[in-house]
Image (cartoon, rainbow, N blue to C red; front, side, top):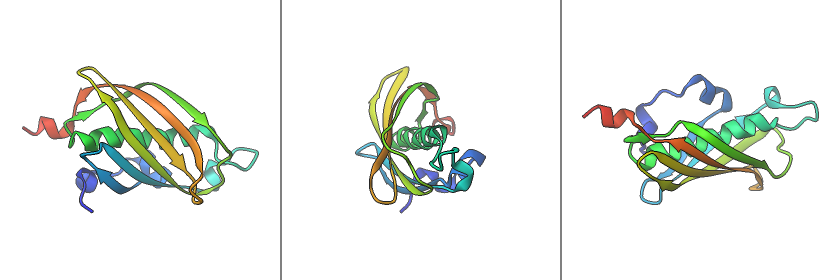
Length: 139
């Protein structure tokens, strides 16, 4: 599956999270990202710490917008709301993101995070400041 991310190096934070593109649907403005959480992500209770879940959600919604605009737009997060719905055990996760609204200055996106069993463990709503993307600067 070819995507706009084929030529982009994965940043250090993405490498830590085990970030990998699984599916991109430009027309639907959606994306699916894989993550892996090991023992380094655990809190004292033995579950994945909520900040890591929020990071996975953030690293899902941002790429959803970037891919939906074919690199023309990215939107650094200025506000987000995350709800952790159930304990997340270490393992593989799937983030599903979508663009809700893209305005001239503000973008609204959403992301959901599922564990290996397909259970929804966290979801988030994000607001970002619309910026010209890397692909737009190549023109």
